[in-house]
Image 1 (cartoon, one colour):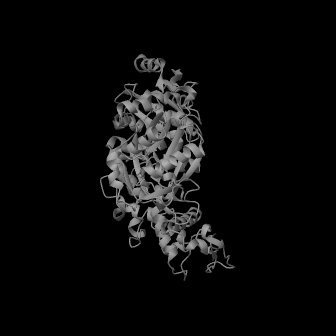
Image 2 (cartoon, chains in turn cyan, brown):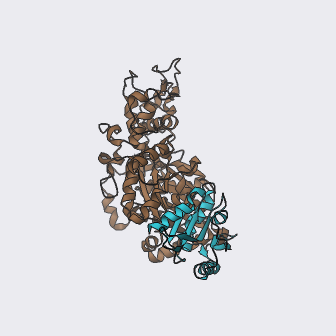
Image 3 (cartoon, chains in turn green, orange):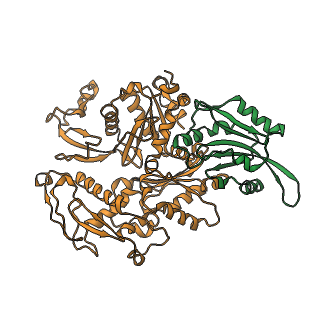
Length: 138
Length: 466
């Protein structure tokens, strides 16, 4: 079941840019004003993880893709993995949560090459450690 | 017809085992919460012509006429639905419920209720409003068919959609992926939702909900106990002329009954009203201890509350507040099988996806089994996104206890329980979810229109409502 809300072309282009361009560090997605499409709210080259997390509002849902760079244990080099974040804070209202939850799949399945997916309701769930744990598991 | 923008003006109806919820899509909570129980009286043909139960029966096909000839005992039923249905005492009125095992089972009273909701309560013209109906993950094709006929042929509504209750509850909690534990009246169920789809393979349910709890309490109150030398009357206010307030707790009251009503009250109505009295007690008094392993010794030290029944009996209740709800987490020891359970609950049999009354498991085990029957890849995500809904889940202490039990069951796992903090969002989770979804202009391509149904029949409904 889904809401029928679809991502705009820009959403997919920004994702491609992030994936292949190696310049962007993250893209934050949200819903358009009229709630009829998924749009890019922000894209940035800022690599700092905390500033990425800072983009997520306390009382509103978001989706985001973050290019996670990490060092393999034992000095085996640096790796990058794309993380898809579903941000749905408890303090968001039901309508907002419902809209995002029912539209997520429309965006997610158009983005190829995501390795890690995180469904978070609190900031404590989006930490470098939590992502690292998932990154190393595969 | 095309639906877009704000012109949708859809309605949402959520048929539950205890109450049916209905209202306008886009609103925060249902306008109408009304019993799924209905009253009926039966009169032999010819005795009374003033029944609304005969609509359509006047037209008899030629070939069928012979069948009814000779059957002089044919009875017509008059139905009483909605708040003024079962809630009002009527001479000789029996009580039924059109739901069984969480599924709409009896189309006649169900369509009466839908009609009552649309015309008498909401006061809308059904031909102008699309309708979303919520359905459990185990809904049957037969029940879908009944409801579809009800909506398109009975009410001539322009469009319909069946929303999966579990998915709607998960979405309303902001989660495309979640394990939804719904503790309701007839059932408790665990439904795994992954990316917006309910996984039938992992769906588990059992008849362990407040209906079973109430039947156990009914037997407890109707028989003398170690602290009470007499049975309680459990009479509702309908049957009492004057209550008999007692000066001290624990004394047997002698209320003045309405003698005129007593002899004309049916067994089914009496039982329904007594259960209502217990339901009230249950809602105000029961709690669940937040540790594993309830025992009577420690229960004696638990806090007591004063409660007064409609007939005037009042008492400080202590361990009874905790003992019966313990059944939800320890059915082996606290579900007394010697007390006859309600007949409708016995219909649930043992399958891969359900437990019968004889094989009830704790709510935590139900969650565990449901998750373990899912693919390994999704288990971690489900464990961290357990969404608890349903009226019985509002029992104080239930969430905390579930947390304790799950941690003991799966010690090495990261477990996280999410439960809406606003009570009505938990009680009416699937209605609330359906309300948002059905109000969206972008949702229009999913509605099954009346024209499409007339052209393709049930196939299009099954195809689109997944």
